[in-house]
Amino acid sequence: MENKLQELTDRLYKEGLSKGKEEGEALIAKAEQKAEEIIDAARKQAEEIIKAAEKEAGDLRVKVEGDVKMAATQSIQATKKDIENLLLNGMVNGKASSALSSAEFVKEIISAVAKNFNSQESSDLEAVLPESLKAELEPFINGELTKSLSSGVTAKFSNKIQGGFRIGPKDGSYFIDLTAESFDALISEYLRPVTRKMLFGE
Image (cartoon, rainbow, N blue to C red; front, side, top):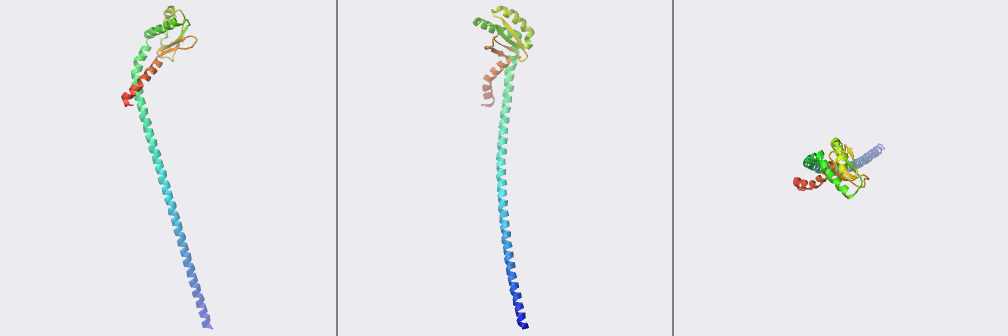
């Protein structure tokens, strides 16, 4: 009886041990498989992160290169413009401003223009002149010029005009602008394309 009991105990022990071992091995295999799945998922995620980072870096590089190129182009254009303006201002402003700031020169020109107006129409004229030349031009306008014309001339003086004058019928229907500013703008407009071609081959 004892032998049978011992055999039964041994058999149960062995079966339990065998079953436990199988279950343990199955658990280990399952854990290893799960670990491999986690590692694969982590590897794929890392690859995706790297690809996304590389794409973002590439996009950023393209954007930065584009921005740098645009900034360089704008800087070159601005530099060309500055050179062009310096050259044109030197060519135009000196002589033109000097002539149109001369009271004697302005007297000659305004006389010719006013007489031409006077021969075509009898309306009174209004002239806007530089404030800086008021002392020399006001007596001329009110005296000599007015006497030589059949219609009247009203003189106004403005600090906005550096040289030359603006003249037209008093009703403001139109006017002729021979100010230093308009003259400089006109000459610059014609000189600019030639200057640009000369300097930059454009």
